[in-house]
Amino acid sequence: MPLEGLAWTMPHCPEPPAWKVDWEAILAAYPWLRSLDGVPQDPVYHAEGDVLIHTRWVAETLTAMPAWRLLPDTERAVLFAAALLHDIGKPDCTQVEPDGHLSSRGHARAGATIARRLLWNGECGSAVPLPVRERITALVRLHGLPIWFLERAEIDRALFEASYRAPLDRVALLAEADARGRTCADKDELLDRIELFRETCREHRCLDRPRAFPSDHARVCYFRGIHRDPDYDAYDDTWGEVVLLSGLPGAGKDTWLRDNLPDRPVLSLDTIRRKLDIDPKKTQGRVVHAAKKQARELLRDRRPLVWNATNLTRRIRDPLIDLFLSYGARVRIVYLDAPFDIVMARNRARPSPVPEAVLPPTRGQARAARPDGGASGRILLELPLRLLHFHWHSI
Image 1: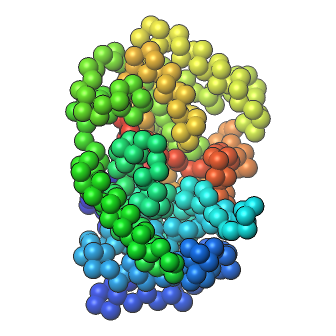
Image 2: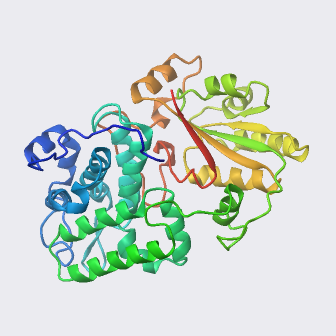
Image 3: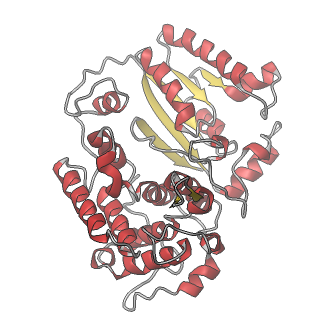
């Protein structure tokens, strides 16, 4: 999501001319940082101390870098927020391995989940626009990519996909601050890997922009594995559009439908759930099965339709997208966003409110999803959505 035209700053982000990192003020403003205090790190890779010490070093290192200081105000604030949040997943992921060393596998994924909620529910400052939230979350999720990208099975694909989440030159800048803001014996090797990452992205034309494709349809075919050549201009033989709505209960999906697609057939999981008298807290297999059966009937007749449900995670969306594409439809994802307080108030006012136990945690209750992707019902939104045809609306 582009940030052009957005003016946002994070409270206590260093400003010219002093560029001072007021760490005590930052700790007072963002008490979630205290969860990092005392979380140990393997001394081979982080001899500087616990995760809170490392986070402070990364923040101070980033703000001393000329490349960061030259960025526009909003871009500086986004990267500074990402520096504070980049290891927020470590408390839940740090463990002692059988050989005795400490690891925190999965902390970037878990941290992205926590960061998204903290940015949404007001614990990183009020009124954080969706593109800003998603840019910060993407940086948290990807901050280790410049170090480990060579170990990916499909390097090109990993870089192209990441380029649609965040500018990879910004990812590299955060990774450099992360590497410099630690004490370890292999720091020069880490910095060399980051520079190689930059050069590789530059060669693939995705360092400072998403990797270009001949068309939107060609991009979808590549990322869905239909074609493997990113430069192949796939023939668009789609016959019509399926809209996949995504958003929390109370975000405004039904209102958007009434205003934009009032005459299109809608498969609403809430409606089917009520007809089948199935508790929202119970297994939803029967609900999804009934909806898919109706969808297949419409798709066989080549009738455009809307699938109306929360659809917040890739694990849930991917089978639906594959279903729609298999019938030759073009898929458009529309994500509806609304502030935390509004979502909660609207849900409580619904005739059949969704139990808050299955909604994201309220303030002060942000916890990480499991690194294996569990607890997906508590994830606000899991990108990338833009790999298809994605639009977002803020209510």
